[in-house]
Image (spheres, rainbow, N blue to C red):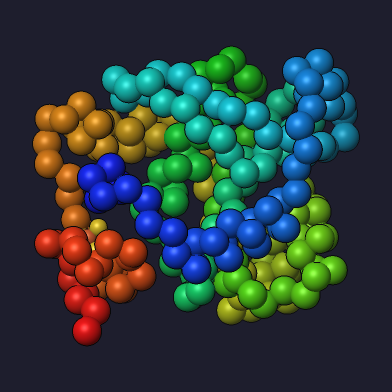
Length: 215
Ligand code: SF4
């Protein structure tokens, strides 16, 4: 983040193809506030997203989840889709924090989150056919609603992993507080402790703290 502020965003092929794949897997269309209210208040589960915002950990926080499943005006699932070229099994701390904070913000916005759960779906990109890409988000949503995610994981073994989390406002608040010092300019940024992360990072050639130096 600090390097992005200092040096600007560096486009990479991985990021560009990840963004394109993301758009294919999560096609969306804009709707009005009234249409949104009508859609999410249906009894049967529907998919819709909105920007989420609020105060957390002493900061004002905004964001936009990838995908939310609603029923009866309540969020049931907040889903983040993360594409990777590597192993989808690990769940990185920042990915967990992100979805937890989205859950917290929905809560703070006044939605009834008593039945809400969170999912980070990590997907090895490039392993799905066109039909599968088009149907992907419906497949994931149906599996989450039916509690059959492990069956989907077996079908896509090594390609997809769904990390399921309970909504926990306290943990989300702690996650924001743990990063708040940086945003308030009270401390220096911390660097990655993972050589693999530095290898994949677009700033590794210039970052003085990189654990990997390209030859
Ligand atoms: S090279 Fe490593 S330490 Fe430097 S910004 Fe990238 S991930 Fe962080």
